Length: 116
Image (cartoon, rainbow, N blue to C red; front, side):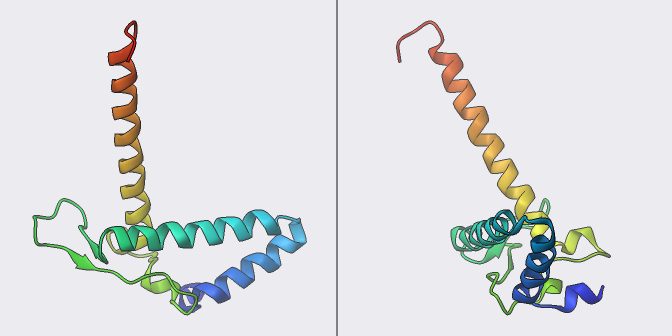
């Protein structure tokens, strides 16, 4: 629980120190950079509003961009899965990806045997 009180940059540095011991520095750096960018791109695409669960229209909740000074406990919780913003964003991104893949597969199936 104390780990959740640190900032994103502090947690990143801790991960990088551990990675140096395992020679995974480049991979961890890329994951942190790409993950932060993906989260903030999602924030921008949603205008900083999130629809938690099966909420009705108008039940949007604001959420913040992930910055270096952001405290992890603003984005991740251990007690309540419903308050775990990182998990919610990842679930939504996976859903969007699956919808795109399904549409692409349907299009490919519609073109099977025909020239499209």
